[in-house]
Image 1 (cartoon, rainbow, N blue to C red):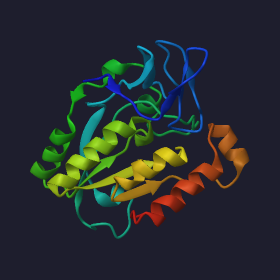
Image 2 (cartoon, rainbow, N blue to C red):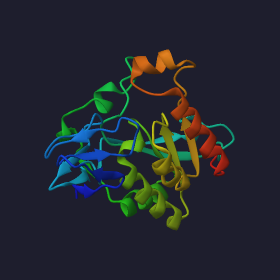
Image 3 (cartoon, one colour):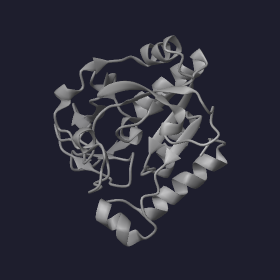
Image 4 (cartoon, rainbow, N blue to C red):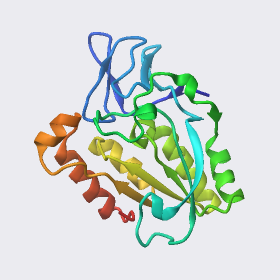
Length: 213
């Protein structure tokens, strides 16, 4: 369950593959992982190595995400995986986002299992948090679809560092998002390995798609 076919990549003439999920455009040899450390070339294709695995679960107030005027006073089931596609020096969850120890992901959780757990614990929504859900897009979208069928909302806590093609699918599956605008200059984003315009475009797209931002 941990090596799931990934989307948003293409083969290169030299035998490598290129990840098209985020602007890093990681070009990978067989067995190599991208900068996020969870997307890998295996058998000539890209796989997501953390599908169905979580670094932990917690029931939180929705205001902790934080979100304003989105089901105020309700509970949210929070979970994440491991890895990240940015390199923030001030990361609060660095032990998860920069973990290269996949064994820390001890909790197996299917999309339907997560939706069911949220309902069982009285949580009106599920939040993808702790690390950036962009890098586990396939898992996040499947969970979001299972939640929608169960009448549970979904929340993406993300830095929005994602390509235009992928962000349409990603935000299209979400009910709400907190997109972390980490700074106001490209110089700052250079420091954390990102791109200001990409994040601003993600914020604009989410709002245009009717996601609670």
